[in-house]
Image 1: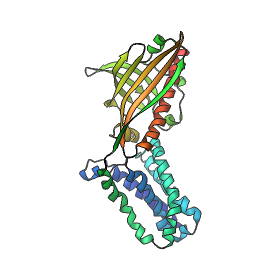
Image 2: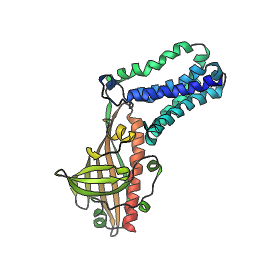
Image 3: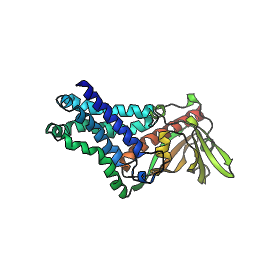
Image 4: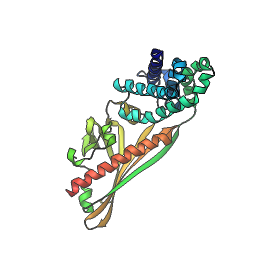
Length: 315
């Protein structure tokens, strides 16, 4: 029956939604401290079960078709993404980060679990819906691995060191036509607008203004005139967006900005190499995967900012 097949797709997606809400509750309740969406349980075990549910419910109608055993789990994952995105539970950047493990698992489940279901082990497999709830508290006992990373980008600007330096501590406003938007900007990563030195509540900050009303508060940690300048980022003082990305990354204990640094190298009378680097730490059990996305996003941001500065200074 076709209705039963489609019900399996919907049930898998709703199961994912339920676990998504359970692993990131709005209330600070003691029991939920053992559950986190930034965990192996959520990233790898939950998508397995979302993928298995359409096969369990659809059973014969699905198992007799090889393409359905692969496509239906994927459809269940996609429906889960659509629901969480439409309800504001996730945004496009979060979906992108989730997509690789979720879709990969969906495809593998169809190939690996189908033989078990055909051997009539399906009744026993229903119990796996509780697996994330059991495994996550066990996972929480294992300490996270904290590691520091650094992403560096550079560009050559046809200006003297003093001319470049004059535009670093307080970056002049970058207009729309001076900034080349990229893929990450279109899915929610804000673009830089300007930075300025301001005194707020008796403290001097370098405030970086971004699109979507994001404001990052920074302080100068080290300065060597015409050579380099470093800034510490104060996330707790910054004005963040009310988005899933800012909540799960910038406000979390899993990702921490250490500092950003500009360095100038004299190449010739009117040619300067400008280097921008960002140091950050990741505290998780999936540092390799988390850092892959951090490198892509931060590296893209640095390159576009440097290109905008070059365009503005050389124009």
